[in-house]
Length: 301
Image (cartoon, rainbow, N blue to C red; front, side, top):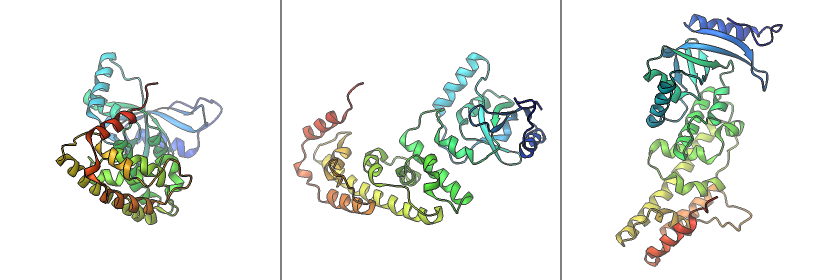
């Protein structure tokens, strides 16, 4: 095992013990060092590939992205981008940011995974929030957030949403995560603009806030069901346009851009559902929807 980058400085006993454990797990601890920004201790390791897995909280693998990475690694004929791992228990190494690179190595039948082992396992949640290996879409990010939420519910039951606001990034992603768990095809993009304005991180511990989140997801689902009924009526009138959901929501939302104070979450969705149910389908023309869709397209930069 190599020494740290500071020859006169010895790593803490816990870090040295972790490096020794890597060896016991069949890996190689190549270097113990302080990273250059915060001066935190880390270990550069080679791990047996069958000991490494993605964290159970992150988004699902994209086969297309994994295949592209596999082809690139094969073309270069070398692996030059180590993943980050944490070790929640002996013999177990989770990567919060290297799921696709790990799959590429598995497909190429590699025996080892080069990795940076971080001693503090809870840093995995922060890394998930900063994961840029593949850009998230709304569904992927929301599912990742709710999986983190459920993990923290078990591991940190005395903490809550406000303690992990950075890792979750936005409160509405928790609510949407619950909806995507139940229905991967849920139209989260249509409701995100409303949720972004009225859904906030809740005070209290995870065991107390999860039931509130479930209730909020149920309110959004009820609005979506009412919206689906209106869309079906419009389709029967021959108005079939991909923007029709957004059109109806834009005309039923109780949130005005001019308002300085916003109603609370419950009040917003009560009013929204009532407005959707009272929506005058007969007054809508196809060209109205089409014109609104064109106006909604952002100008090119």
